[in-house]
Length: 152
Image (cartoon, rainbow, N blue to C red; front, side):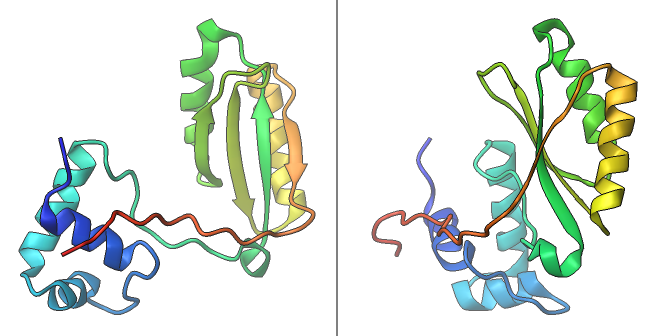
């Protein structure tokens, strides 16, 4: 199903800069010349159709604490159970399966490195699986946005 006009305009305009204010959907609606209700309905529709997974900020983690990319080699028959266990941690902000020996990857963010090591140790004790811990050494900025063509 192709994107409708409002979906395309909303993505083009706000994938790199949601308004930071008390009423962001009102501001978005004004920029798109529609109502707040239309913006919210559009976002809900995109989420229902799998076009939108998240609305939220991306933080500079080094200013907020520490983070690490972690992975587990999970037996296929335990993948769902282990993924659900990982998702219970508020420190987890991404969790996804990959086709690899290390098949479950997640990002942990916390107040400091010691906190992250405690979470990883707890996960290891809980699951019996040894996490691969890959803290970031160098930050690279990439544009995660995409052009959708000629947005009306």
